[in-house]
Each structure stands twice: as structure tokens, then as C-alpha cells.
Amino acid sequence: MKDSYYEQAYTLAKEAYAELGVDTEQALAALSKIPLSLHCWQGDDVGGFEAPDSALSGGGIQVTGNYPGKARSVEELRRDLEKVYSLVPGKHRLNLHASYGEFGGKKVDRDEITPEYFTGWAAWAKEQQLGVDFNGTFFSHPKAEAGFTLASKDAGIREFWIEHARRSREIAAFFGSELGTPSIHNTWIPDGHKDYPADRMGYRRILKDSLDDIFSVKYPSSAMRDAVETKLFGIGSEAFVVGSHEFYMYYAALNNLMVCLDLGHFHPTELIADKISSVLLFSEELLLHVSRPMRWDSDHVVVLNDDIRFLTEELVRSGAIDRVHIGLDFFDGTLNRIGAWVTGARSTLKGLLLAWLQPANTLETYEEAGNFYGKMGLSEQLKSMPFGAVWDMHCLRSGVLPEDKILQDIFGYEERVLKGRK
Ligand code: RNT
Ligand code: ZN
Image (tube, rainbow, N blue to C red):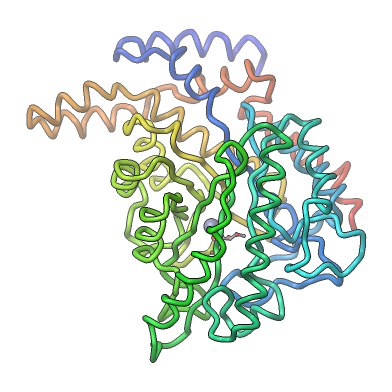
């Protein structure tokens, strides 16, 4: 589109929204304040940089595809991330996994990691003005092969992973204090059984004890805060996941942690949007993993579908979005990974913008008056409003390419940078 298009389109869109009582400027101001935590693992199919190269295995995480151009080193990953941030409007964060440390080709086992392996990331994050969130890596490791980590009945295995968790939290606190913004530390473990377990209570008791041990170490909330990620099932843990939703809801509530809700971790028809208000009435904070399940926890790239719209609507309508940490969690190796990242992040932001462009009061008034057609009809009308013009304006004001220029730019990066990676 020509440069003059965006300004004109925005002026008309602004008028159209104003007629519904929606102030587009207010919507844009609200959107500018939202940080997304961009996950490092879309860049290399959750590979990480441990030595020797640890192929993704075990534990319900599966990446398919071998599209050329994946990042082979920390340097390449950072370069890719810089590209991604330059195409996503706003100021965002980085979500690192423990397996992405700079180990210098040395074998550093998971129970040996320390902040020193992450000083390079901290320096880069400082330079890029990014806050950093952190995750222990409880998969892709021989000691996770049997399918159990923190809930293992083998004391040696359990101790190993408890130590890993302790160290991950210490690294999160390091990032938080270094960067002056609390690091959200998330714990997800794959533990579970493929078929119906003979013992459920036992595993859950063990997990509870392991967590009690891990979280007995306290860090100031200005440095790090903990989340625990719930899950219904995984590949190889179809019948039983120790860290189920109920388990972690109670655990988080009673121990002053937050839960992490991943869009792919529930029954396929369950809406995460419906859970936000229940969680935030009882918990100070919430972590989200924005993902796109397809039939299972497939971690497809996020696009602007109904699940995302319902979720973002609820974040805005709840009035509590400032208590929610929005992380992205998807990985697809079948396509341009930079494009995947950019689309996932931009789609999440677009969802938020759409939500802020709704006349929430009018919808609520219709509902309270029992005028349900009014609510439905207005919701449908909103779908053909000129939202794209407002989004483009947001991008331009943020110094980022508008929607119609993204594709060619990503193709260009592929030609210049990704194709050289053999
Ligand atoms: C797995 C969880 C978890 C991972 C990342 C890589 O089902 O969603 O969050 O995707 O830790
Ligand atoms: Zn997740």
C-alpha cells in the first residue's frame, strides 16, 4: 500500500469506531503497554545448545518439520530474535529455557547449571532492553526418558531434577536482579503414564514433596516469581499426568504461586478464556502460554482464531490484564521460523487490539437487559469494522512494518540470512 493509504484509512476507521463509542487512541495506548514474552524455542525447534547435541526426545514434546534455516548457535538465535522483535510492535520480553545456556561446548548437566552460563544472555537482553523469563528444562534428557522427573519414584532421578529446579530458580532470580524486572519462572514437567496408573496418589504426593522442597527457597518478588504449568495429557502420558490442573490450582493457591495455563493443555472444547476470571479472583497473578492446539497439544503457530479472540477479550474485559503474564508457546519446524514467531506474536496483539476496540459497555448493557440478540448482532457487526487500519497505524507509530509489508520482509530475511544456514 502507498504511504498515504495508512493515514487516510486510519482517519476513517477512527471515525467509524467513534460512532460506536470506541476511542481508537485509547485502545492503541492500552495495547502499547502490553509485553509479550517471546519464547526462544520457536527458533530452533526446542533444540537448545547443550553439548553434546541433545535431540528432542521423551516427555510429550514433539516438533515436526525440517524447514531449512533453523538457528544453530546462540548467535544465530539472537540475530533471529532481533529480527522478530523488529517486526512486532511494542516492547516485549524473552522467555528462555535452561537448555539454551552458553555452555561453550562443555558438558554441563542440568543439575550443574549456574547463572554464569547465562551472563551472555543477560548482557544481550540489557542491550536490547528486554526482560527475561526462565524455564527449567525437564525433557530431552536421559534422566527424563522413563517419563518421570520431579514425581519419579527413583530418589536419585528425583534429586537430580530437584537440583535442576533449584538452579533454574536461581538463574531466574539472577536475570530479574540484573535486568531490574522480575523474571517469571515457569515449571513444566512431563511426568505421567501412557496407560491407567496403578497409583495416582503416590506420584502426586511425591510431586508435592518435591515442589515443597524446591519452593522452600524464597526469592524477592522483585527478582523472580514462580508459575507451575498444568496439563491434561501428553504424548506418552495420555492416561495420567501427575501435574494436572486441579493439582497445580490447589498447589499454587496454597503456596502463593501462579498457575500457568497453556491453551493446548485442556480438553479440546474447553476454553481458557473462561478460566481467567476464576483464577484472578483468587490469585494475584497468572501466566499464560498462548498456543494453538490442533486436535491435541500440537503447539501450532498462533493465528487470530476464535480461541485467541475469546482469550484476549476476556483479558481486556476482566480489567485485570496487568496481573497476567502473556507468554507464547508454539514451535513449528515446517515453515519459516521467523515468520512463525512474528505471526504468532502479532496475532496475539491483534486479538488484544480487537478486544480494546469493542464497545464493552454496550455489550454488557444489552446482556443485562436480556437483549441477547443485541449482544450477538453487535458482536457480528464488529467483525466487519475496519480494524486493520487501526492495527497498521499502531505498527507504523511503533516503527514496525504494517501488515501488508511483512511477508516480503520475511522472505527477504530468508534469502539473505536463513538460506545461508546449511
Ligand atoms: C509442554 C509445555 C511447555 C513447553 C515448553 C517448551 O507441553 O507446554 O510449556 O512447551 O516448556
Ligand atoms: Zn506451555
